[in-house]
Image: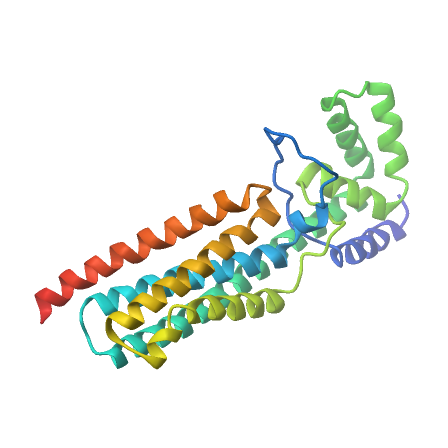
Length: 266
């Protein structure tokens, strides 16, 4: 091994870390027909998932909070204050959670990549044999596995990328994304969702506000559930109805709890 091997491996690690992203989930065959060629990009889009689920979380959580407070029979301005508090607190919580989650995930992957680069640099023969054994486990005959592993180990960047994928389960063909972008997206979409059930209480109060809020939230919940079909491939009616039912149950329970608590503390 030459003195340049560690530096070459380090450069390879630096280049690959720029394309680092998370471990791909296991995929199982769809039970039914899939129709035309699928749009792979849409199903992989972390931004799309974050937008849909962020809005859904904001809507369901603040709807439940607002209905719980409204059910207690307090004044309309108290419901508005609670709704705004839920919107702001939830948005910052979601943003902070997304940021920390993505930041830690990136740091873990970076550590694994640097460690793998170090191993390739100081013990390339052992790493080559390890790669050959992995291919043998996949059903490739030993002679072919040996030739493939030897060829892949000739280029430090290719070697590192292959070990990351085969040994660590890290695919580097897609960017992991920015923790700040994820946090901003979560904050914005949660805020939008949380604002939906709050809006009617800004213009009216009492039973009218509750009814309008329920109707507006129901329409939005169905729409968000329908939008999830972009990711799941399920029917719009099924997905929309499921999401509507989940939101209705959550809001109904908290409303009843609020009514009981309001009766006790009043």
